[in-house]
Image 1 (tube, helix red, strand yellow):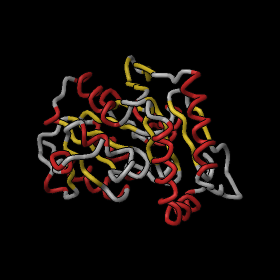
Image 2 (cartoon, rainbow, N blue to C red):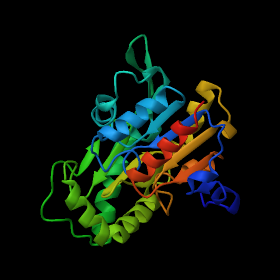
Image 3 (cartoon, helix red, strand yellow):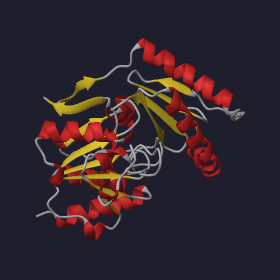
Image 4 (tube, rainbow, N blue to C red):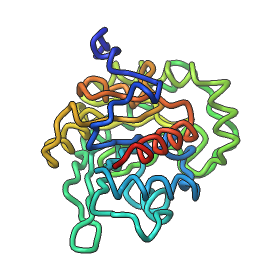
Length: 270
C-alpha cells in the first residue's frame, strides 16, 4: 500500500517533537536497537532496562525467538522489569510475553506447506529471470524456513557484519528489484527488505502494522499513547507498515540515535 501524505506526517526524526505522554514504546530490532544480528551493547542494555521500569516496551524483529534471547534478553540488567516487555519475533507472526517468571508464547502463525512451496519456487524463478549472480562465498543457509516466515539472506544467515555492510552499499538496488519481482509472483504474501542483506516473506497482513495493533489491543493502549521507532521506512522497507497503523513513528539512522531517544525518554520520566 502506498503511503499517503497523512501517514508520512506521522514520521518524525527530531527528538524534541516526541510528546511526553507515550505509554507504549515499540522498537524495530536490527538497525534500530542493534546492528544487524548483533547483541545489544551494555549501554543500550542499561538504557532499555531503565525504560522497562517506566514504560511498556515492544520489540518487533525478523529473527526467531531464540535470536531475541541472544540479542536482547541476555543483555538486560537484573533490575529490568521483563513484565513490561513484549516480543514479536518473525515480524509479528509470533508473540511472546513474560508471565509467571517465564517467557510464554501467546501465538504463532505457521505457514502452510503450500505457502512454503510457492515461496521457494518464486525465489528460484525470480533469480533466474533477472539473471542475478549470487555471491561466490556464502556464510550458512541462504534460504531459511522459520516456520511463519521464509528469509532469504544473500550472503547467508551467518555472514559477518562488515561483509553485509559492504554488500548493502553496492547491491541494495538489486535487492529491491528482487523484492518487487517476488511480490508479483506472491500476491498473497508480504515481501519486505530486512536488515542489510535479507528479504523476508510472510503471510499477507502480517507485518509491523499487524504487530503494533495486536499489542495495543492486548494492552488496551491507544494510538495516541504509542510510539514506534525504526530505521527502514523507505520503499519495501519492513518498518513502513508501522505508519499505516496511525501511530507516531520516529526514524533513526543507527542504534546510536535510538540510545539518544531512550535517554531523552528516561530523563523526562517523573
